[in-house]
Image 1 (cartoon, helix red, strand yellow):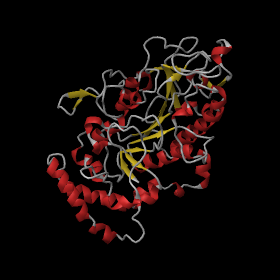
Image 2: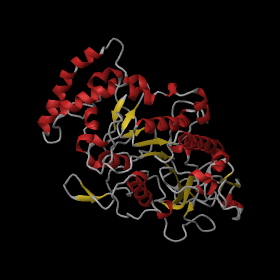
Image 3: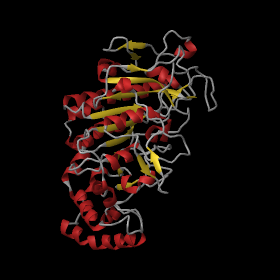
Image 4: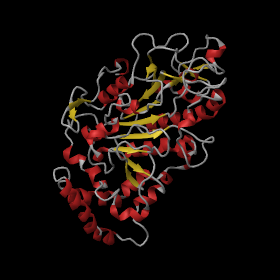
Length: 448
């Protein structure tokens, strides 16, 4: 199903059925059509010489344990260091968890940010907006959609593969408007990009009259916002009819050998789909790096995946190898295809986990679990980023950053810099008041 995510949604699922196909993305009477998503190219302002790079943003929902994965403390007491040991990588001095031997082979292709500070709660919007709860700002992908959408690929600039989570990942366009919401594929997938059985392209064209009726109503509501709708409706129809778009979403076109390299669980194959989308021209693709029931079933993302209040170590033994394989396959694949300098891959959760096992920090915890913690990690690779580095450092128990911690705003400032977006500029909000993209515009210079 083709879906535009509405502002301030409480759940990232739902959408259109095939019965609604003929409305080409219309959500409801007076709502917005898929054509709105395409309008951005006509209004996009930006430097044509800016680097045409893309970002794959991997959200690790629930808050993965930094001290068990990328910021281990082997010399700490057992109630802090836990059950896992660090292993060497192909970068001298860089060590990661024994649960991730594949990434250890290619550590020269990514960098680790340690002492990554958030609120220590399930405030996932901080990762994509940079702002704490209560501050309504557009998601990173929406900003890119408006300022650096690219041109000529046929794909929307901002695509989400987030399918199901009880924690809304911050993908709201806020005051940038629904035209910059992410393009989402739901339900039956690629089949929903194809006209229903018996619906010829001629009959599809006949339905444009119905669409014009809805579009006229919307123009009557706000002429300034919906000018030139007919042209964008025609382009929306072209998108639905485009074999290139269907092909980009069609994993069946990938060789079995490639799919096997990623691992055939639904959550892991999203990494492969993200690669296909950026290769086809998408600028930002978001996905959840989560696995349910050892990767089985049809729900590749769920908040509880990395929220290890209970049975932290056994759950990581299941989760981490999936993440290891997925990131290894993605980074290797991008390199083999010559895309590693054009695509940035970011992986992070909304927090880390408490260094001391079994100690509550205010949320539910058990004797073998790790509670919420405001210090975590971020992994970043490709796109011209300096790889093979560990940036930032935490104290001996991985509790706090040494020196000034890096925050989601610093990470986003770095990504904006890679994409050629000036964070000192402003965008007017709903009231016309100019808003900076970020309050803290300091980049992580060690990565640039």
